[in-house]
Length: 497
Image (cartoon, rainbow, N blue to C red; front, side):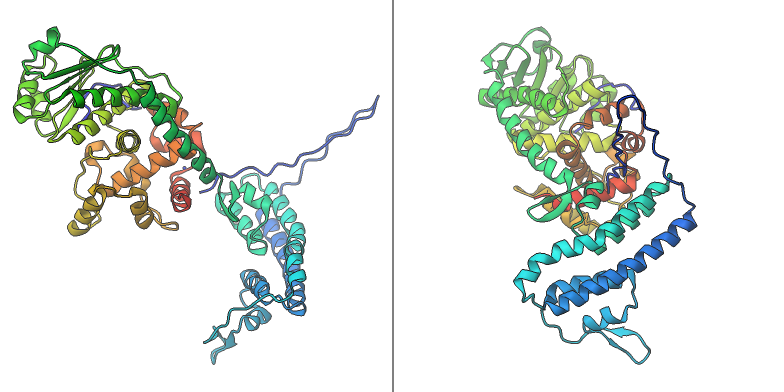
C-alpha cells in the first residue's frame, strides 16, 4: 500500500541522571552563609590514581567480608564476594582458590572440573549479609561519585565504567541503580521505562475500548455528487457526522470500517496528546472486486495518469486532494486493516507533518496502532533483505505474517541485548526501502516510544516534522545518541513481558 498525499518535506542505554550534591545552607538571623567551595576539577590522571587507591581499599574490605562469610558458613554468599574481588583484581589468589580454581603448568588459573552448589547455613548471618556488604561499599561509592563529579566532561564510557565498579561491589546499590535509570521490579533491577511501559500499555488498551464505545453508530446513506460521478456501483453507504464509508461489499463491512476509522482518531489523539482531525467529511472507499478497483482508479477526479499507474500495484492508498482513503484488498479483513493504516498515516501527517519519507515512523506506529485497534498487521510491504539470505528472509516474513504471530517474541530473538545494529540506516529510509528486519525494528522502536516515552514522544515527532533528522531529534529530545537508543530499546524489549 502507499500514502501518496502531499505533506511538507520532513525536515539515542542509559538515561544518565546527573550526580547532584544537595547542600542545605543554614542561616541565622542577621547573618549570611558563604556558599560552599566548588569541588575541585581533577585531571584525568589524578582521577585514575584516586580510583586505583579506592579500589585497593575496597579489595581489603571485600577480603574481610569473604573471611566473615567463611566464619559464618555463608558459602553461597561468599561466591559473589569472590567474584567481586576478581573483578577488581583478576589475579587475586584467594578468590581463585576460594572458587575452586587451580594453577596450571603455565601459571594460568584453571576452573574446577566439578562444582557443587554452595549453601548458606547460618540464617542469622545471612540476614545480616546485605547490610554488611552495602556498608563496605558506601564509602567507595561516595568517593567514586565525587570523582565522577570532578570530571565536568565525563564521557558515557567513563561514567558507566565507574557505575559498573560500584555495582560489582554491591549489585543492589540503590543510588547507582537510580542514577542509571533503574528501579526494582519483582526483586529484579530493570529500566524505569519498563515499569512505566507496563502501566502505559494497559492504559492504551483501555483507550481502544473507550474509543470504540464513543464511536457514533453509522446510519444508512446514499451516494452523493462526486461519489456517484466516480462510476463505481456502491452497494452500501454508511455515514456519521464525520465519516462517509462507501463500499461495494456489505453494510456490515461498511459499518465496521466506519467505527474503526472513527476510533482510530480518538485513540491516536489520546496516545499522542494531540487534537488531530480528519477532513469533514472523510470519505472512505472499500472496493471488493477487481473491476471496482479499476473503475475507481479511472473515475476518481483526483487520480491522474501518473498516480493511477503507481496505485495499480498497491492494495490501497490515501488519495491526495480531498484526503480520501481507499482500499481494494482481496478480503474484508485486509480492507479493514488497510483503511485503518491509511487513517493513522493521515493523522501522523496532519499532526506532525511526517509522511512516508520517514519509513520507521510510518510503518512502526501504523502497524502498532492498527494491531491495537483491529487486531491485525496485514498492511505492509518490504524489499528483499541485504543481510539475510533469501531463505532466512522468507522464513521471517512467513513468521510475521502468520495468524497470531508474536512480533515482540520474534524481535527478542533477533534483537538481543548486547548486539547492535546500524540504526542510522533504518532511520534514514523511505517506507519503500524497508526490509522485513527494518519493519520489525521499526515496530519495536514505535512500541518503545509509545509505551515508555509517551510524554516526550510528541516533541520528538514535532522536531522531525519541522526538519530535524531522527538522529538529531533523539539526541535533543531523549538525550540519547543512536548507540544508546539501540542499547536502551534492546534492553527494554528483553524486559518487556
